[in-house]
Length: 299
Ligand code: GUN
Image 1 (spheres, helix red, strand yellow):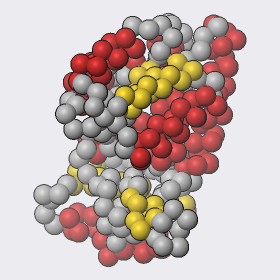
Image 2 (cartoon, rainbow, N blue to C red):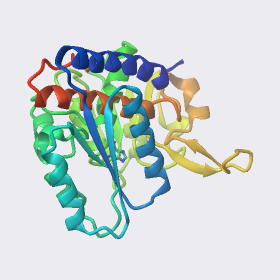
Image 3 (cartoon, rainbow, N blue to C red):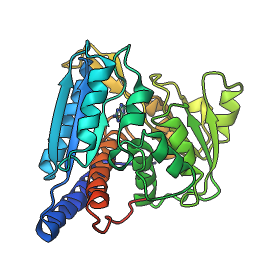
């Protein structure tokens, strides 16, 4: 069993991206700028947003953080996005998902200028990804997973990849990337209404679990030498932990890892890759908007 070390690979990417930022700076006097918007006070979202801002600053990417109260109106949110859409110093715009009730996430995504849509949530960029047009952005978590497979030289061609979950952030775009001509897997998407889930999982060469159910995938559901990509980040009570909880994935790591050929841990697997791909997209946005040669594709 080989542990897929997302922390290590993301550290490599951060150093490559830092170099790209320096080149933009010395070569074109450019500094990529990333606007991060959070609406409301969800504690987990706050932690994610703060780590994105911190990482951007470490890489020399100018970050602009906007914290709107959970009482913010739809119009206030859209007005902020429209301002950011036209600012020359902002190359990427991210609105942390999910927004509080009463705010229409689809409307937010449609309002973000597609050339600044670093999450790839705007339907224009989702469409580009679907048709294999690589001039748009790729969604951070699914693209980060492809980078992990690639950097571990894991062959995906003709493999049966089973995705658990059909979210717009992970499941659906993951299916598009895994079935793309760069990756060439055969894809099955499973969800809460899937019947015979165990049978489908037992046929999987690669499992991408993104359903938000702690320890859902157990050893009896996977075949020998399966490749496990665990996107779940679930908090479960743990009286021994300092914070009173611990993080576990959607896969029962202790039970499944002895059967797996490769497996991502939680934390330290997929999570750090999401942030790395976001930083890459911010740099790509800066290049697109300033007509500079794009950084090399990571997937
Ligand atoms: N919520 C969970 N993952 C993400 C992400 O990648 N981007 C944004 N904006 N919100 C998220």
